[in-house]
Image 1: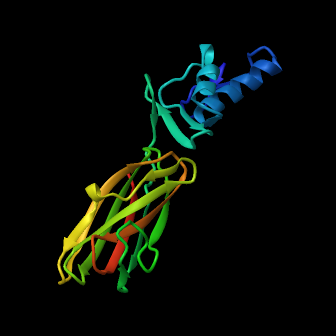
Image 2: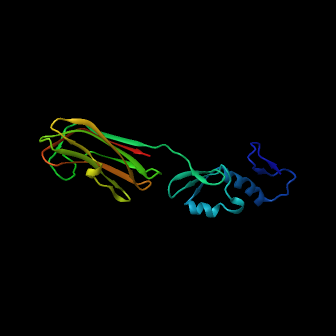
Image 3: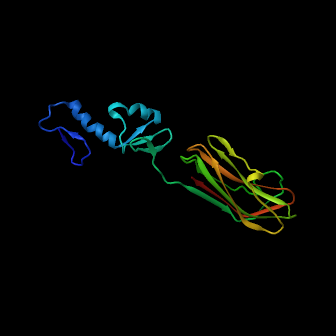
Length: 211
């Protein structure tokens, strides 16, 4: 029995091979399937299917439909293939104010969305210039919620931009890594509050990056 011209081990019946339609079909279909991107409902479905004579070999590529990820077999393990990561950016240069001592949106909402990456982590960077009419502490943090998991991060003073002066300070920047579910839509919204007085916030921005 002959093999293909590309040295890929695909058997081809020759004139000396006894006629057998089933063997002929399998000798063509099986090697082609093994060299294509095979689709499985999940990792467990892949494990159940790729056993015995169909056991995985180095270089095989599979797509898992439940997590929408591509894997390659390195001879021992299924390794996720890298894919492009995305980022989002939104800003607001207009001066916004608040007199609230609890976290809120100030006089205008600034938010953005991003999809949860395979790592299940998103880098959130917030930036602002701010001051306070009475020189009291003025704080900026953020809330984050997922379309699947609900609230995943709540604005807090421990991880917040803080400035206490009647003179504008900034740009002040804070970066935080948050966890999310893979594939869910994550919405991040800036939050502001003051200890007293009126807080002024301008040149606000929000950058989201899959990691």
